[in-house]
Structure formats: C-alpha cells, structure tokens
Length: 448
Image (cartoon, rainbow, N blue to C red; front, top):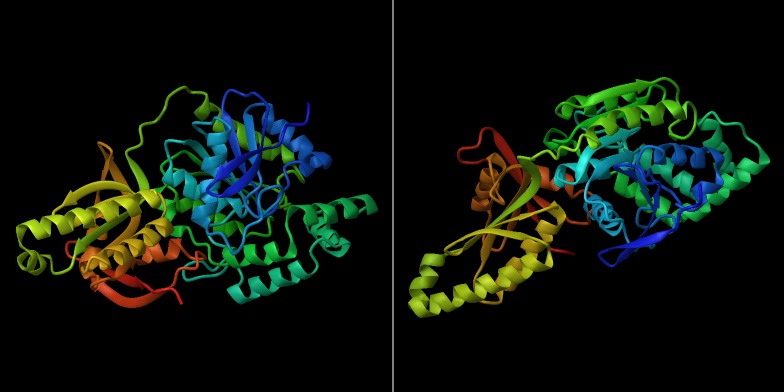
C-alpha cells in the first residue's frame, strides 16, 4: 500500500494534520490516544500493519490532535469541547458526512462527546481502552487520586523522549526491547509531543469527566477493553452500563496500545461491530441530541419600559436583540425563540455557550440594562429544528435563579467544561420549579 498523503484541516485558527487510507464502503474515524504522529506511525511495523488492516474494510481517517504530532502546537490547555471540534473539522476536510467514530484511550471522551453532540454524523461509536474520567472521583473509585496522577505525569514529562522512557513503555506493553526499538520509540515520543505538551495534556486529562454525557449517547456503541489494561476494566464496565444499549467486549491480554498483543482480535471486534451498521444503507432518524441551552431576559424590564415609553423601549429592544444575535453568531449559537425581552438559544458545546452568555451580559450592560442568563447541558428532543424536553425546562429554571448581570449554570455544565479555564462561584443547592430534586448551581466568575 502506498503511503498516504498528509493533509491539513482547519479547526478554528488551528491546522490539524490528517490522512485518509483505503477506499472502503464507509468511513472509520480514528481518534488517537494521547500522542500520535500520522507519518511516523508508518515506520513502525506493528502500527503500519494495524492501520492497513483497518483500511482493508473501511476508508480510514486518522489525525493528530491539536498540540501533538504534525498538527499545530497551541498555547495553553485546549478543553475537551475545542478538541472535539477537531473531529468535525477533519471529517469535513476529508469529505466525510458520516462515519464510525473510534476513540482510543484519552481520545475516548472526545469521541464520545462528538457522538452525543452530532449523532447524525456518528453511525457508530467504539471506545477502546478508555474511561469517562482518568482520576478518582465521587462515584468513580477505579483510578488513582488526582495528585498521584499529576505527579506520575510530571515524572513522565521529565524523562520524555529518552531511551529510559521508551524502555519503560515497551516493557509495560510486553514488548521485546532492542536498541533499534528504544531509539525509534524515543524518537516517536519527541516527534509526537514536547515535554511541556505532555504536562499540559495531563492537567487537562485530570479534569475530564464525561459521565453526565454517557446516558445521552444514542448511537450504537461498542466498549472494547483488554482484561489486563492498565486502565481498570471495572471502570470500562461501569461506563458501558451507563450508555443505553452499549455492547462490551472484553479481550484477554494487557497491552494498552491496540496494535500490540493480539491486534487481530481488536481489528476483528471493530470490523464485526461497525460493518453491519455502516453498510446497512439506513440512516437513523435521531430524535434527541446533547445540547447546551441558554435563556436570557432583561432584569426589571417592566419598569424600564415605563421609564422609556413605547418608542424608547422598542428602540432599546432592537439594540438588545442586535447585540445578542451578534454574540450568538460569534459563538455558533442557534437562536430558537425570542419572546418579548427574552432569548432562547442552543449550542453544541457548553464552554462556547458560557463565553457567549458572558459576552452578552457585558454587551447589553453598555445599553444601561442588565440581563440574567442561565445554562444547562442535557439530552434535548429534536422537534422541527427546535429542542424540547426536561433539559430545556431546567435551563429556563436556572436562568430564573440568576442575579442581575449573572451567568448561572447547572452542575452538569460546570463538570463538562472542566479544564477550560472558566471559574465558578458556588451558589449552593436550589429547588427548580417543576423539576424534581435539588440542583447545585454555579455562577460564572469574572476573569481574574
């Protein structure tokens, strides 16, 4: 097989390196683990063999995540939502409308979030050797505490790209250690990421928690995990149980890297799961989608209208609407309804929604008015290009609790933007009218 050409997809202001391999009847989008290099992979026999096997039954699309491999290096720590956008950008550039999305290890949460947010583009989802979070947390006891994880990753970063680090990796994966392999894998580390990127990625991974997303996945899902993987299989079993209708396959052995060990079983499991789904020729109609809803309304609107009179109030509303629509366009928000002085919009990412809401409150304040804003992320029913359901009701109730000029979010929103750099102030538990239970709410803090 001739080596594929490396191309670039534009994701915002970042270029993402990708390759397309094979000409199969459907697309298989491979979201790699922490570090990769799309060109260097072909120099390593096990990885080259593995990719050719995948490309034997599908059109394989592989890419390097931002900050790694041949993709642009980036400043700071990109959040999961931003990195999820890279999948969409690569699919668009490769001319892929729909495909089976595979998430490997650290790429699992990214792929999972994509499948829940864009179910019309994900025919199937495969999560290999992955977990919904990578450190211990309440209700998730299967990983080490955050401080131990970060210390371990800091040590990895200090030795990154050395033969010592390469030896440790090869031995942990049950591979024979030769001088040639040590040299190649040390080089592979250096050409996949810098030590600084390793530390940055570790800090982001320590904040990942996509557990709230698991019940919202509505595409056929396979959880594939080796019994002796260093990521505990108990956590993968729990994850599988939370995804509606998910199938789990437990493979013997322990290498975390899928091209090591019994790689043929990995390929066969993926092929046997996704091929019947993707070649059936039936496009499922998705009745729900993961979305973030935003509600805003003007504080003290009745008194303000009385103060300005009908004409003055109408002019103010026109300026208010224009400024909100300007921010919605800037942050990819979709306006769903406008009732009087209130707006209802949806977003495909909670961090974008928060930044949009913050920009709205600042922009309309210049008009001499304040708005309250509320956000919630959840599974929304799709009805004639609009969304409905309990998640929408929760969003409206959260907005009603907000103070003048405040952006208030639910616990779910806060959890999903971990690692984005956004800060919050705890507003405590609240009862939301018509919604069962207590809901913990958080105000978006002003930047330091």
